[in-house]
Length: 115
Image 1 (cartoon, rainbow, N blue to C red):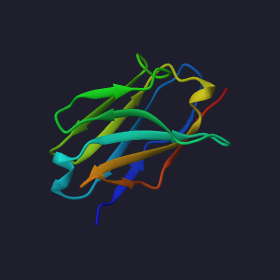
Image 2: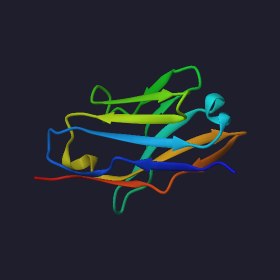
Image 3: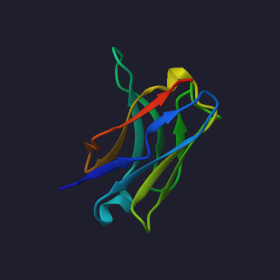
């Protein structure tokens, strides 16, 4: 019943910026912790950033200071602003919502950082 759709991925040069957006279904978004994960080829999926229903954020050490997660409850969206991108940020980025202690995933959006 919960659906998430990511958008905003693409190709960007090192040092560039990209903004990802996650559109969630229904009013349940307002009470759901949201997170962005990423998975690079041959790697485990890792947590990049999370934000609680109250706006408390958490970041992986590798992105802290460069990425910012935010949410707009009126629009049912959660965004990830990515600055100072590095080649090692290349991955498929997934949106996740925790609803009734169950995680829901979007389809993912590819981010490629390359010159």
